[in-house]
Image 1 (cartoon, one colour):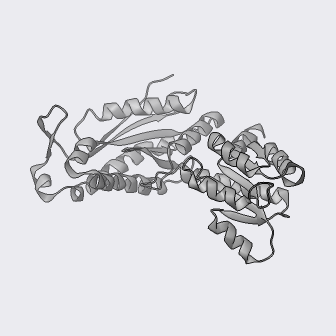
Image 2 (spheres, helix red, strand yellow):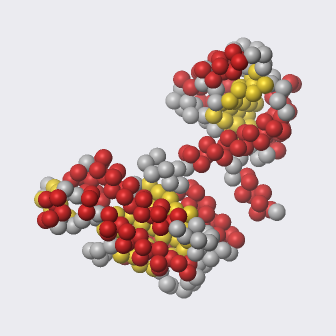
Image 3 (cartoon, one colour):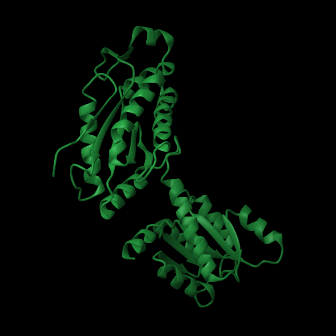
Length: 319
């Protein structure tokens, strides 16, 4: 039960409530704080705008009727400031006709609810919004894959639950030279090629744990059951090697290399892209936390990068 509560708390976020305390504000604050959210309550629209740039709320609940500003003016002010522009905004207001809904959405609100909404229902909707928005923020803009936060959370849960797991870290050897030769747009194509391979292999896995993601740059990671990790790495290597040729101009591919000026101003040759994978598993050793597991996987990945072809290396040291 305690573990379930800690996991549920992971969706708790920073919430700014802008409403009179005696009517909606106080009860809503108490409800949200009971859910584990970090809540700030102000009754003034001007105070809300000033506080928001310091508090940086993930979600704002603002009453349409305020003593100084119209709630929609608060929406517009928050959207106009880059520091608060991405916050999700919920407006509570009258329900007499569609005009209020349209006004709210056109002013920057994400949702518009009747101010008579049941507070328990509102709390559930807030929790769902935070979960959805946080998932989007933690995904890679380029690949749409889960980011490092979700991968770290998965490994942490495996460690806490004593669930057997394997962690694979992967990146592209000679990727910087490829970017220098062909530019960032072509570099993104190479990243997407590896992303498709990791996603295809990860999606075909059966059993748990299972998660694959884009850590950032040319770094990818995958969590899977330990007994399949060797086959997973072999499949990633084979599929990526089969996808490399279309990434190169025909002349460069025929030459077997690209020529790039390095940081010292010297012309240097670089072989085609290969994928290097480092693996650690809970079979051979125990981990105190997810960062320790990631460090070992990264160490193994560096060993894999020492060979000129696509390769993977697994840590089998006992602890």
